[in-house]
Length: 122
Image (tube, rainbow, N blue to C red; front, side):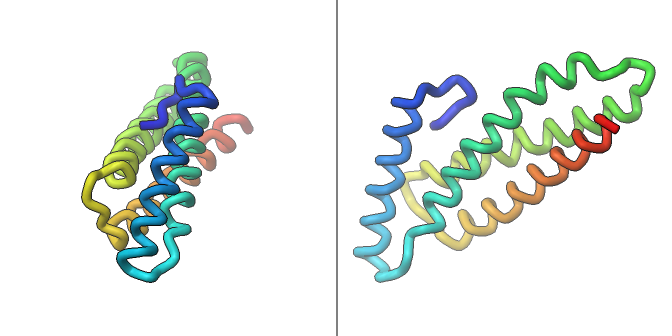
C-alpha cells in the first residue's frame, strides 16, 4: 500500500498493480476501470497531505485548543478513511461500487481537512 514514506519506485509498483487490476476488471465486465486509478491518485494525495498536517498540527497554538481539537479530529477522520480506501483498493476481491463510494467519501474528508487548514491559517 502506498504510504507517506513511499518512494517513487514503490508508487510506480503500486500503480502497475492497479493497472493490472484494471485490465482484469475491463476483461471481466467490459466496463471502464478509470475509477481504480482515480482512487489510487486520491490515496496518494491524501497520504501526501496528511504527511504535512502532522507538522502543522504540532505547531498549532495551544491557546486555540478548540481549533486544534477540530483540526486533529478532521486529521484523524482523514487518516481512517484513507486507510479504508487503501483496503478497498488493494483488496483481493474488487467491489467497484463500494470503492467508488469510498473514493467520493474520502474526497469529502480531504476537502474538509483542507478547508480547516485554510481557516486556521487566517
